[in-house]
Structures are given as structure tokens and as C-alpha cells.
Image (tube, rainbow, N blue to C red):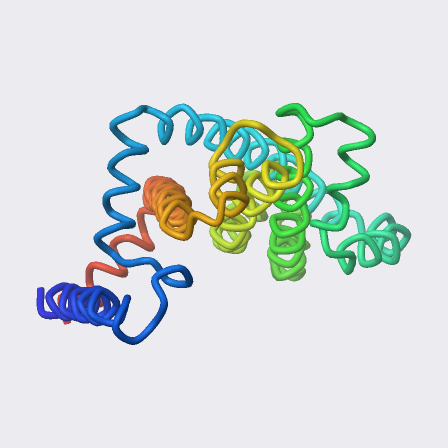
Length: 255
């Protein structure tokens, strides 16, 4: 409770200082003010624009996140269990991973157009590499001696994967998923900023084009809220699939 109250106090101090500084100390054109931003945000909500544009961004983010995560887990599992294939593909994967994924957006626009599909594919590409690298590392971290002992006891490959590899690597997988949530949103937003007439990225770009500082901050608040909701959803899923970690956290808090 003390931590929560401390956070509220810090936020209130920042907002009050911001409001007081806007005008007397800093030109409102550059920073607007919390009161004006709140009014603009309320206008977006009351007009329904926030929800209509926000829903487009949610769809792009979630669909891209789902396909990117599934592909990353699958490829990470396959390469983690096949050392020869991993060595063959390692230079290619490292080369593509080293490339800033946002740089692929112009190419994706030429390939897939400016529709929602381009944003989904860009988001999935960004998510794929983050989830893949963590899954691959988790699979490779499983103790080889344990796997060899189970093979001697008659276990087959699907037994090793379902009973040992996946349970051991699941924490690595969720680390990749949590890391990729904000990047999935970045992929959708950047795609909308570059080529779209819908979505939160479009709202952001539209406000910036009109030199509407309050509108830019209002769109940023909506993006932050969406990112926090997505992070909370991934944490909830982690608690469901990893109940032992939740129990451990509860014990730590009770100490």
C-alpha cells in the first residue's frame, strides 16, 4: 500500500509541476498541459474515435503477436533440438536479427500494400525473433545428461519435448513473450504511422501533422494504456501456466 501511495504521490507531483510550468515557464506549444491533454483525451473517448482506432491497433498487435509467437516457439524448439540445422541457419538468422525490423516496413509496404495485413506481418516479424531467441536458449539450456538418462529408460523424442524440454524452457519462453509485447505494439504503431488512415498510430501522426501537441500526448496515453493491458494479459497467462512461480512470488511478498 505504501508503494502504491508513493507512486500516486510521484505522479501527482509530476502532473502539478507540469501544469504550473506550462505557460509561465515553457511554451504550451511544446508541452501542452495535463488539463488540455485530459480534455483532448475525453473528446476522443466521447466521440468514439479512440475506440474505433484503438480496436484496429489491438487487432494488428494481437494477431501479429500470436502468429509471431507461435512461429518463434516452433522454430526455437526445432532448432534447439537439431544442432546441425541450427548451425546451418545460424548465420542467416543472426544477419536478419541484426537488421532493425522497422527498416523492413518500406519493403513490406511494397510487398503487401498499406492494408492491415502489412502491419500484422511487420508485428509478427518483430515478435518472432524475440520469442525464437529466448525459446532456443531455453531449449539448449536443458541438461543433456537428464535427456540421455530418459532416452536410456525408453523415452522417445515427443516424450522428451512434452515432459522435459517444454517445462524447462517455459520460463525462457515467457521472458521472450513479455519482452515482445511492447515491440509488437511498436510494429503496429510504426506501420500505421507510415501508411494508414486508421489506428492509434494514425491518430498520433494526424495530431502531429496539425501541430496539435495535446492530441499527440492524448494518443500517446492511449498507446501506453494499451501496452500496459497487453503486459498484464501476458503476466496473467504466465501465472496460469506457471502456478509454481506465482506461489513463489506470494511467499516472497509474505516474508
